[in-house]
Length: 135
Image (cartoon, rainbow, N blue to C red):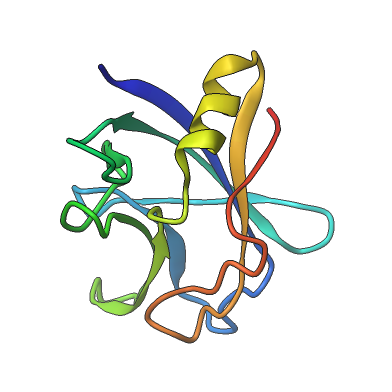
């Protein structure tokens, strides 16, 4: 059985160059973030989650989900004016736990949020991990 999880990424450590930056889908389209008064960008998307056999962690899928089972991630990507990738930063989904999924699914108006930093690395740092908050 699949469940849909709303996700929110808060990105305040923005690239200093003026290229196209956004949440990348499987078609390599970049979804721009919503600018905030503090200069950060917010990216919203939804992912499907389904159980795996035994005690395995959750498995994620959807238009913005990349990577193999057990190491799924979202991409925040920076594309140059020539259309080539300048940088793609992996946002790990394997930090999301079954109890968090239960909290989001159990209550109306909840989502999972993460504050993203470390955009200079290939894998972003999520200092507080994924947190359940009000949608």
